[in-house]
Length: 292
Image 1: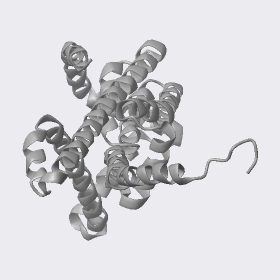
Image 2: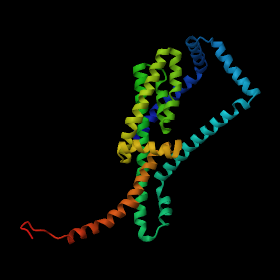
Image 3: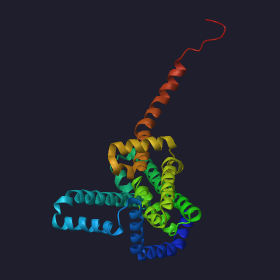
Image 4: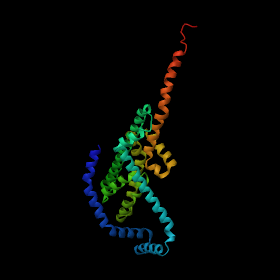
């Protein structure tokens, strides 16, 4: 499965790179066209839009304190988000790809009788991590495929493959990724016509809803072996407890929490209560149907 996806990506890379280069070269003309369209819609002349942008830049140059606070906040937030994504993905990759050094180090913290149980728990956590990464890759491919079919084959939007792949990769960032990657295709569609821009926006909203409510929970349920309802409610709970960074790794946190509860609390209780329940049932008097 992963080899097939890797081969498909290798075949598409030249086309994606070519579309990206063409889009970059056409960017000045596209910006001017979008400026003209916005001018027609808002009644502001295209030259005045550029003048307002230049005025804002000049204001910042002469009075940087007017914008410094907001820009500093945005910069710190963006840097933190990127750092969180990189740390989460790299940590998951190294845990899944090279688990033995980590397992050996953690197992040594337990006494010899406890080590088999510790190994079992760590291997279950590794399996859950691999399932999350596999489910994330599947969700990225499905989102990119849906967007390409909608933008390229139905709407006929140029550079549809590039926009679709960009949105698929951005699925690493829940919610925010799908929202921010909708801006370039909607802006490009605006250079063609306002109607097409609205259609593209509607497509992105629909695909985002499908991904958030269908693709994400169902795919993760199959790969991480959790019920879709548990995933949906768990993601909300993890996001409320840990904020945006919790959303980045909500599924691994949820799966790990469930595994630890099962192994640390449920399994020992079941192993202790089963003999007690069996013994108590054997001590109960057996009443005969014929009376006392």
